[in-house]
Length: 121
Image 1: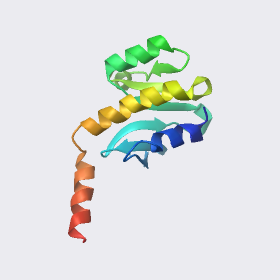
Image 2: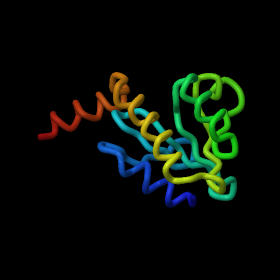
Image 3: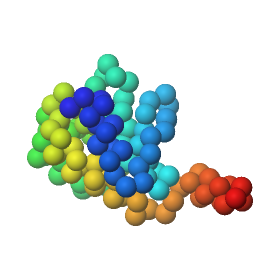
């Protein structure tokens, strides 16, 4: 999987949009990040899963998925090794991440942006 394949997949989910976070692309739904792309030469993506989902993906396909080091990883952030990634597997993980983002309450930034948009009409 290439970084562009990862990007297209992330943007295929309803309401998904691309923004930037810490100088790399991120993908958001409901104002919440559900996936990111690392710097191109590192060839990594990231999906935000629950810790239980992370464990399932990492155990079933360790060549494709690995926890992000440190605290973010303990919270479910999971690296996607793009060189080894298969679209069907990444799509399942990304759908779980997107689902998590869309079921959480909207981020404060998203709520503020929506309120600003309404007042400009």
